[in-house]
Length: 416
Ligand code: RNT
Ligand code: ZN
Image 1 (cartoon, helix red, strand yellow):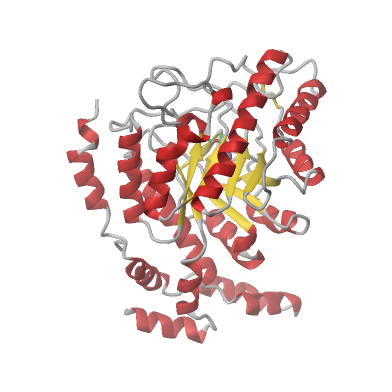
Image 2 (tube, rainbow, N blue to C red):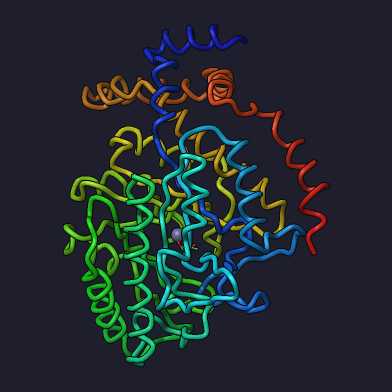
């Protein structure tokens, strides 16, 4: 079937494929830098372990070890994926020059200038994350630590990150979403649940007292249900993070990571729930499996449902970012598959006759609603996807994996 034939079929369903393609080209998706090097960053000893509830498994060869390697890998992903992208950086990806080094509480905008150059040359905006894990100052708590020395260090880190986020937004002329997530919690039953939460709240208050322009810097609070080694109690639980954001709407927005809820809860349903109250929200799109929250994003039912809600509620109100890390397969492929799948899910959401679906629901016509929703699943989506890839100048399905294999043979497999 040709694209023209597919277009005609969608037209019968009341869907304009050309308009969907155009709309998708303007929805930014933030690409997480941490898939390329197993969340290690460049500011600590390369042999140091990951801590704070973050775990990558696998030792597939080819991990990026330097900024240059990570940038080269990112470039290939950008070339293989359609759509409008932003880069998502963690503070631990600071780039130090001439033997200089700064601890996390002393990071400055200049340590991210190379990333600004990278983004500028590629027309990308940039999002940012303070890194409250994998560092000797995790005791193991950070923003909720009872040790005031520890807590001060991490508050200062958060403030430094506000200044860096403001710099990134100003330099690149696009807002910077700055996400606060800590793995603070306990392996076993705590003796005090309230204390850590009060300290966490106070720490975020102090971080957000650093001046910033809320139109340019959008601080987020991300919740989590549990992490490896912190199974019993998470300081930044769902209620904590959401309440913080709700009581501080003039300063920050909530962030939902769809790997951070109990297995039968779905973030797709939570999107309109939050947007009934918040002008804007942020998402980490990932794929949870059992205890892990960070598998590569697939073109699966929940990813598609999340994207349907993003589209129906207004994509301009949702800051979309990817968040997963897989060290057991080719990392460039993992990145590419996840980003292409998110783009596919957004496109398939844009190819729904949403006005009609809504009218059927409002008219109590649930029989036809089901029939139509089921029949849409076999509409000729692949042809429209191929056309979108063509228009974006990237390979269609079946046309990109060879490039990754060549890159693996020539570049990745030579890394020690
Ligand atoms: C961890 C959180 C967090 C991290 C990144 C690296 O469970 O999802 O967002 O994945 O900050
Ligand atoms: Zn996340």
